[in-house]
Image (cartoon, rainbow, N blue to C red):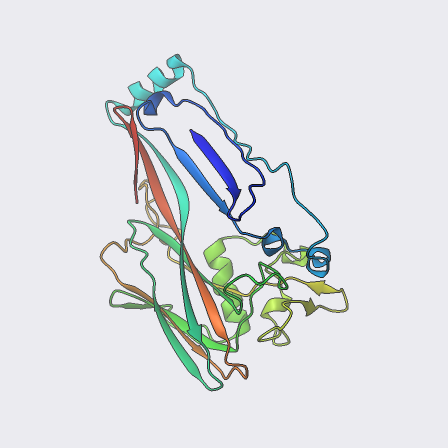
Length: 287
């Protein structure tokens, strides 16, 4: 396994490499490609960095990987237990789909196709930003709700959820179910209670928010929908999400008027089950 990374800019600011050998994939080396933004400011959620966007540098960037090496005896025991079947690992992966839409100074509807065709689609997420190019004067992780009214998903012939989420409480509830856990939102992660309150700013010019006199914060308004099977479903199966291999998916949203008619970047994220299969010295994935 090897990896190399650098900033996607004219100056090369660092590289990192890790190599290892997987005995079950001797003829299939794995490669991890990492591409970073052109300016370090664009990925930092730092008020100081935003105020002094040329007064700091980042160096000695490292990629640190953790690996487990099994002995030949352990591998033999695993293979014996598989009774001739190939070794398989189930992991979760994300896919990102991006599109733009202009939200007019009037009620606006959007319908975005999401090419998420997987044997087990677990969750879908939507994050909306007003700066698609990652402006250096804005928090990189911030997003706002843009006066969203309601939203629904069309997956094939099925429309979900059965009732369109149309309040901040419903938006937040669906997101929590899709993520599974937000830890303790009172500890103020990027996703926090304030972002889902009726006082949250619909469109922020500076992407900073005054929260209960605690100072400026980076906030993120996200939408999400859980597509996993019910809790009492058969857990013996490898996949627990919805099979969308033969389904076209559209995320339909309705927005109230936005005075500045912003050009909004919609980031959709698909969480799906990915199976790694190790067979005859080759590793391949099944989605």
